[in-house]
Length: 69
Image 1 (cartoon, rainbow, N blue to C red):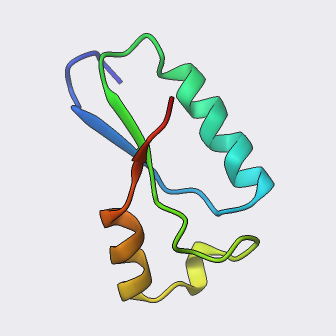
Image 2: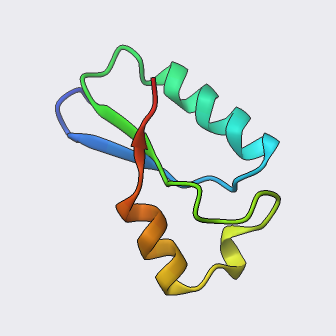
C-alpha cells in the first residue's frame, strides 16, 4: 500500500486470540503509514467466526468500531 491511498483501514478479524494477534501484527506493520487503523467492535461472540455472523451483527460491529492504539 502506498502512503496516501487510504484514509482508514478497518481490520475485520475473528474475535479470538488468533484474531487479536493478527490485528496487532497488522497494526504494527501500518505504524509508519499516515492512515487510521480501526477494528470491528466486539459485538461478535468471542471464539466465534465471522463466517457465521448475520448482517445485522456485522453492521452493528462496524458502526461501533474503535481506534487501535
